[in-house]
Image 1: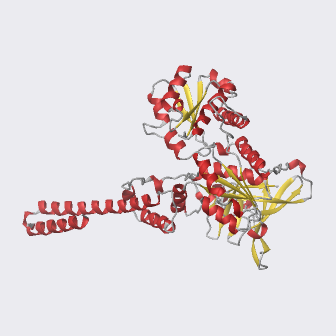
Image 2: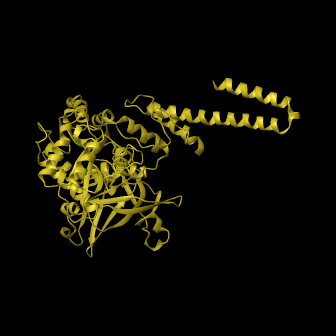
Length: 525
């Protein structure tokens, strides 16, 4: 098609040259022809990129996936800004590569090898929203890792579509279920505990169970822990302690974020909270009705449970709008009932399209204000604690209680885990992710040995503040590390002040090229 069009344009160009005596009119014809060919080339390049994106928007990994992900990104990078706006396919659009969802380098894919005999595999559906992946999925993973320092925590996503998206856009490789289980086998893991971050015993949980069962004979013991909301129950009236804990935790977080002292104070202000879940056609959809029952039983009359998919039927957006309207509330706060604040939270709930929940609530004309809290359940400490408890039930091992600063002794040195938000910035593998924590004059400092001498300075705080505060740059020491094969290497080490245990803090790094980068770290005993 394009070849024929270019030929036609060439003939047109020849014809216009034959009538050059016509002056300006012929010149305009030539310009029009050239513009038309340029437009065709722009669209052709955009269409090629869209086709490559559609090719990796699939739920099955093949031996061509890696090269397909690379080809899609290279095609995108070759486009001009104008051409990128033309990208449109069955699934492709300019946001696939173009939307800023945060810094992927802060995420740890947790796919390291040589991990010992005990593994906790944290399995999530996944999200391509980088900030949410760090805060929500990473939050749960870190909480479990802190509770089980003698176990290795690893990650798997069940959505290959999302895995491919992250790999193509950010060059971060996350294991799918088969890869993660094969990795565990190759690492000689004997005791495997699988902790899903799924909300309920739905279709995804069933698929996860089936996949794990196929590997059961490759380990000495395999346990699958409960999802967040525990057992489903027979009908809408069936609730349990997990649902009660979750209901209290998410409501308290939403109320505090909104600036109210209590759920009753919000009700007095005519404010209702609507938690939007995904919804499912699986029999487990009754779980959403049970969560509404739980809210009612707790006396949270201004809390409503809805679902994007509208299953069960009473949780559809139009029905929730009518329920909130009938209850007489004039202000609405929307918040996801999802572990991660990803595409559904940002688009289906808080997006500007006319079919988003925010837009539909606004279009009803029944409310004075509609606000959105875009935050996943995974970043809530009380929710993380529920996952830890489920992991504990599966392992049969009591989780480690974090030591408090005032329990540490002056002058003593402790082995402590140093956790970062990046697979590129971490403690040297010879140190098993740990450093030496020292208490002196009531203050804590951890000494860490890094992987090389490429990081030349650290700064407690943000990168933006580091350049003007050179006096507080942390200077490197030269540390000799010994690897498992007996070889040694000299790397840079640092003494990092620690304000509190089990609490994230900002730590910027300066590389050899003179650029500061932001990172978030934590120290756990």
